[in-house]
Image 1: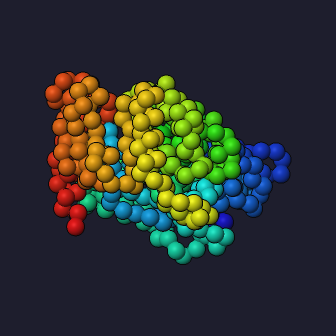
Image 2: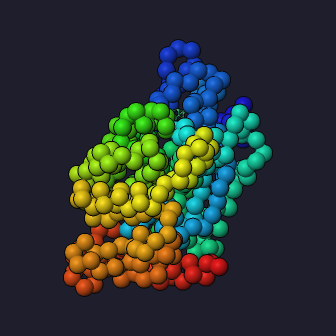
Image 3: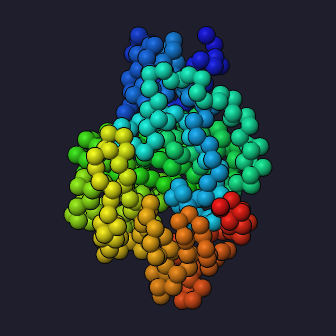
Length: 361
Ligand code: SF4
């Protein structure tokens, strides 16, 4: 079979030959899978065929949507704009409460006929038709469909559109360094703040995610962080305090999204996060020096508003994913007290906002 065979996807990036027996070492994420000839890596998305690594999910689009950028969530990056969102099957973590496990772990039959192979050639035109202001690689983990995502991000970059990587932050440093300038923004899941939690609940490593958040910031990528608050597992005052202090030590301007958990997958017996618990987490974040803490998956007054840390004025008001008011349009400081507000506001959000309201029921 040749390298372009549809059964084998495309030649992968970030790997090397290992040993004399045709094994390869994938270098795309912290697993560093050593993959014998004829086998797949942990994520099931990358396979060794004749001593070469292939990305099996190249072009398999398992999820596709035009979303508000607030849904990623990114609140300090082109607020009110729309982002063309793409997800492909596979994941390198095994979260017990995975909200997208049909896509992340599609089962041994994958790849089958379930996904539209070849859609990569139509996506660019669709994004233009829908007037997207950015591309997002999301829903599963872009690290395990990196060739597909990076090719699309390069296409978008060439046409002047930024890309967003919505990630668990468990990629290799080499992959992360290869993302800019095409990838301009990132939302990173920081799922908890103990190695025990990461190992037992997510199948990941906390140290890798912490290092990657710091590296992404140093590379000039706009970063926001999300923590899904799972009752009894990662929501103690001490753990949240350490997590928030870590983020504040990187930058007090780093937005932190604290999200409500809903029972899913193998955590169907865990209760929904209470609003009281979310509000307590927000207070912890602010007390540790973070200037922007948002509550997600929950409705309430001011839960998703961007408030000036200088004078308390509401600069961006949101109702769910809808931007109702944006005083930061085209500027980067409070319109009242002139405090600088960190973010990538440099666009006219009026078009995206108009489109958003048009799409809303
Ligand atoms: S991307 Fe997949 S194959 Fe590569 S190291 Fe990670 S889990 Fe293993």
